[in-house]
Length: 294
Ligand SMILES: C[C@](O)(CO)[C@H](O)COP(=O)(O)OP(=O)(O)OC[C@H]1O[C@@H](n2ccc(N)nc2=O)[C@H](O)[C@@H]1O
Ligand SMILES: Nc1ncnc2c1ncn2[C@@H]1O[C@H](COP(=O)(O)OP(=O)(O)OP(=O)(O)O)[C@@H](O)[C@H]1O
Image (cartoon, rainbow, N blue to C red):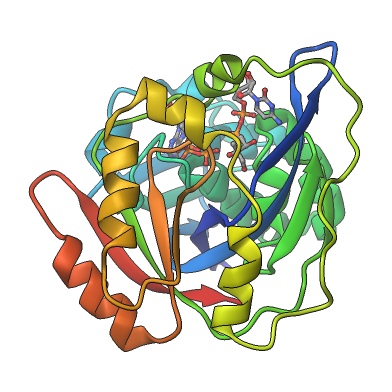
């Protein structure tokens, strides 16, 4: 098999409770994570050296990212690729990324690409790692990489992001993702939370499943995204975005994802999500209606 293509779906934190902080400063959290049917696409193919090419509507957002910080190349190097300058030694591949997700957006764009590269190169180079091993390896590249490695399976993520547990069975759900065009670095949002170093005990009783979209949204509304208040203080557009989504017809709930600034609305069907996306489109906003994958 010489060409392998992997979808890198957008990661959505339907809930995100921060339960404490480790001595190293990383936060302990518990989050119901799902994936949307919109994302990047990564292709790897056998080649005589290691190369990376990016295309797509958000390719320019990566133009200033040095190779050393490129999460796709970091994944390749982690799995034993040759350095870009070494032709022929180490494992090689031509890697192409179709970049559609906004960067530093709270929907795991870089982590999703990193995880997709790990899955694709694991196959191309016949490394034989299972998802749990790839996730454990990927944790050093980002706290969202383990959950993205096992995408598109919904899960309850905990620890700093390394623990992946079964999610409640999800109903058919649609979403609208809205990014107001303001990149948000994850670290400062966690820092602004000013969490106290405490132990991490789950504060959520997870049901076995949800009978329908309205029941799922009812449950989500009893939970929180603890990063939303500090993100709202740092980026005023977050509050405006959540309010605009919540005002759309048939919206079941609206919330920020991850550390922002992307916010999401949940809907029971495709028509409602598509109508909402149309109503939300404006200059400078990235807006996508998508199915929640399961
Ligand atoms: C907010 C989430 O996206 C929710 O899924 C993740 O927890 C963050 O995942 P991520 O963007 O891959 O985060 P990383 O790139 O690993 O970490 C960026 C910075 O966020 C902070 N960070 C991240 C994860 C975590 N559990 N606690 C933290 O305090 C740390 O300061 C870290 O230096
Ligand atoms: N393939 C990539 N896609 C996006 N960002 C990348 C990529 N490679 C490296 N980066 C860098 O990673 C940083 C942001 O990563 P990412 O897009 O995962 O943040 P995010 O979408 O906010 O994710 P999260 O939901 O974890 O906050 C940016 O500074 C960007 O330069």
